[in-house]
Length: 153
Length: 153
Image 1 (cartoon, rainbow over the protein chains, first blue to last red):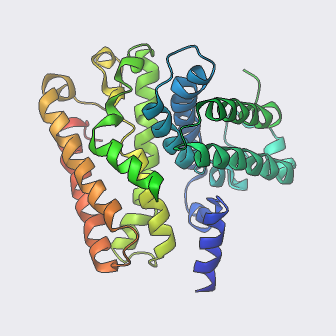
Image 2: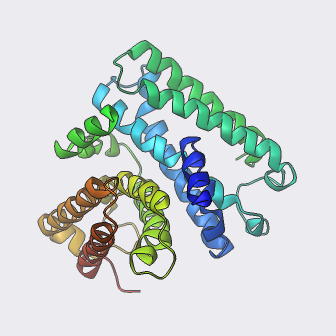
């Protein structure tokens, strides 16, 4: 019961880290494949519609923005348990800082999740300027993490 | 709640297919990478917790089941625009039937999405036996599509 309560609290806090005990049973290369899959799909929905719509590069479509924010809200919680210490030796774009500065990496995740949560809260309020602005704030938050924790490419 | 309702309405209206015009601008190999990413993550959440919990192979945790059903509900709508005709020549696990029997493939997707929608509708009702049964029905629905449209491996 306590564990369920903790899971519920973590879930409310937007933390998908509750899967850690189970992810400990998953092969490290599979964990890397799964976290990379979450990043690929965040790219699909964030760079595919949300950012170019916020930037005015493609026409703004409210229904598509709402759908993609809902997708992003789920995807944003998926990669983090895939950065388990066991994956340290698996070739990927993660910098060594992911493991040597785990506290800062965690802070960067939480900051990103907080910005995505703000975006989700705006999703169906019909305030297009606020949505556009928050999409660009989320974009900066992605970059904030990539700068230190993803190899340049 | 409102957000969930709106998402459900959009899903019923088939609006998850609206990305097709944009996907036409994405490179075929990227479309394949994105659809494979959605399958990888469906595997993470469906085979990681939902199915083994439904089968009684690992302890049933209601909060985790609810979270993973929400993730699955989003992921289940992500792969399909990635099976664009332009991807026909890209090496993948898709069988030729994906393109030669597009109507049947579409039917299989819709049948799967209908079963996932039933699962989502059950997610927060606390009826564990019904949830377990529907998880196993979704599992059959995955297989129904894989049999004809994914190469054996």
